[in-house]
Image (cartoon, rainbow, N blue to C red; front, side, top):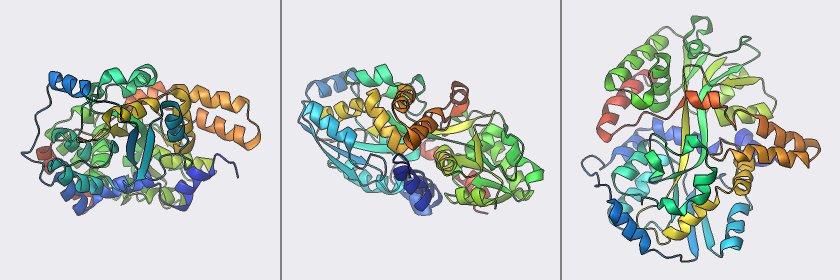
Length: 409
């Protein structure tokens, strides 16, 4: 087997794609929703003043150690990038795969941070969405010192420098991204899908898969109506809910899925479905008859972000590591293993350069990665991608029931 394939294929084919699977299951569970909202309302922290943060960072020193909390399967197994960081800077590291599910992780760290206690982590990875917003609203994340991010500023793609959920990257920098579009089984769907309306087409009655997560399906309901989720209103949510309800009541949807949609479309149980880019890329590498598109009306981009939690013992060392991961050669090493969307565009050319000196299956794999729009979205795709609808705690109480009433009926 190709030496570049085993880590990703083992994640994608012999077990759930851990990163996305557990994140989306969190959105389905009542417990996850309860943890997400618990104690947040009325507890917003005042944003720190600029002078206060200047004074904070002026007082911080490099301590020579950093503790990084991440998801499983999100760092090469040999910790190559972290070892290089240690060799180049003299900063030792501890790497802990302690994040198994977003709401669960937030539920664990929230009371600790509220009590003013340190987590024992200097970097945590949080996906844009409800828990990310809570981290910011509650003052659980330390605003970053932008002067300490030269690699980020030089090498991050423009699409990652001013996200709607964190304008100006005040609190975070992206670690890896993926996006939600439409996949179809080419054995059963012979046309080239381009529009989100294919998910609502009666000719696919009973063969359409939709996602059960409220934010995912809500975005697609809005895309179908020409609404930008990032700028949407409560009235827009209700209109999208009616569109999705009509789709359900017409019998077009076979099932509302968590992670299991990928097996269903591969088997032909469903022919066309909402899908995550990383899942489809893995199935394409395995030779399965699936294709993928970001529909012309729009798709959803999600991003896992690096944050420094309040009370971190080593914030300077943390920022040095965060910025180090934006060196193109390090970002390339990460992306070869993760095989999601990197925030560093130069990785694409570096993979092609590596392919020039490789041969056989290794060369083929490097070129597959470099040429895949699922790892390197086109500019046209980026222009169509939007984040999840930004929701305050109060808005969640309106938004979630609209779409859960469809998927859980």
